[in-house]
Length: 322
Figure 1 (tube, rainbow, N blue to C red):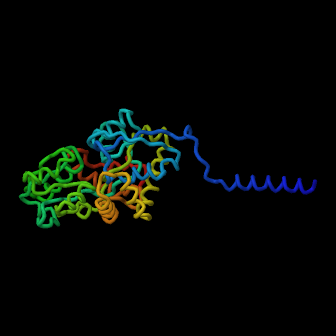
Figure 2: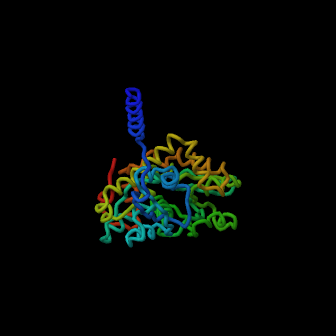
Figure 3: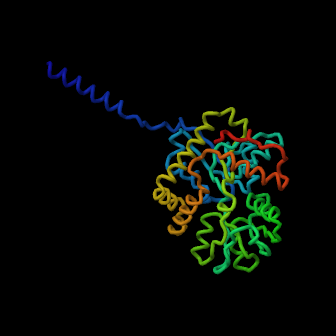
């Protein structure tokens, strides 16, 4: 009898300890908060890798969030999608939160996703490197259509440097056709398009991350009204993106492998080159913390081209600064 009681006590102890050690319990699907994220463009882009890592590596789920993507077109259309309520968050140029705020619909940047201007100038093999704006003199430059950040930055660069060059607007994905047809001398591409072009024999002749430094190029955004009404969810979205950033920098081989699975139609070597370049040039920043100087840099450009009023730094559009 004593032996039976002792066995029962030990069994209960084992069950208790086992239950207590199970600190990572599965979250019920009903507990997840479902959100839609409006994204720039019409497909996945490698420069937004932190968002896809947050999905594929379980960082959204870690914070009890289920996130779906909604492709929404150009930068201005992304935040308009959020304002309409068709998505709760946006992935695009965060400056449109300031532009919207100026129009009476306050927006906020929740997290940084691309911390520098993630564009590289590509030209035919043998073209001279372009190290400063003056080297663009006389060239025909292919870029995304206005009001994209790319167009705005190039227009401002030429204006501030008093450079005479021609900007040719082209739809996203058609940039290399300009080079191939001889209608442009240099085109500016995102990754992995830049590395793909390089693999085909083109030359990367200019780095805008190196030229511009820290710059609020892409952020996770929402309306201030939504952020105030959903503070915990908004913070968790930022935390998930931050987890993805740290994962990419501390586990780069694993991040590259994940990216290769996310973009199965691309040459794995191209993906590896692109992700390595993004990390090395810090377009994929080490954390999702919003860089105040990078924000002010972007604000200044938009003020110079007349999209934003002068005399305001729009810091109220930032969820947090460092």
